[in-house]
Amino acid sequence: MARIAALEPENMDDEQRAVAESIAAGPRGAVRGPFRMLLHSPELADCVQRTGAYVRYRCAVPWKLRELAILITAKHWAAQYEWFAHESEARKAGLDDAIIEAVRTGETPEFTDDAEREIWRFCTELYANRRISEAAYAAVVARHGEKATVDLAGLLGHYNLIALTLNIFEVETPDGIKPLAE
Image 1 (cartoon, one colour):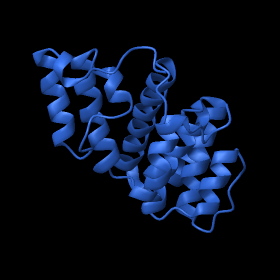
Image 2 (cartoon, rainbow, N blue to C red; image 1 turned 180 degrees about the vertical axis):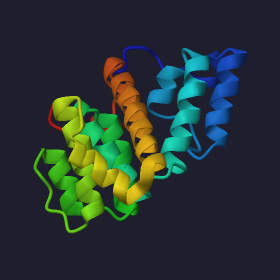
Image 3 (tube, rainbow, N blue to C red; image 1 turned 45 degrees about the vertical axis):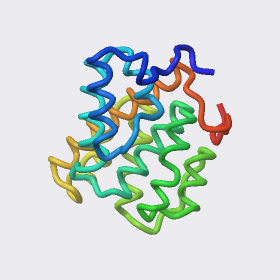
């Protein structure tokens, strides 16, 4: 059970209601997961949802690679809801089931796509070393450009914030499913 109650519309103040309506009217279509907690701080919730709408739906990193980076982040933090919400999105984006399963179990995936391998290396180096080697950085810049590399940094930052929010407030997945070992 979550540590703080999710706000229901009838219990929201005007600012919270306005942010909730903005979230629901955007690409997410509803207020779910971390946003149910973040609404306790409506100004923060609005900043997070606007950043998330950009990095998830419009940034320069291709959709499949964004979802791979999100799954790696969810695995790093054992963020159950984040994994739950993005595993199906990764499949829709075209990420192979074997790669998804390898990330979920902490194995090194067998990549046939160099772009996927480069994103995996970038993310896993960051989480293992708190830094990225020049080779990993250069590969992502060479393939995607500086703008996309900045967008990737923003995507990772955003989904770390989401993972932390989910874990701090113990946001559960539907039916209490735990797809990741903790």
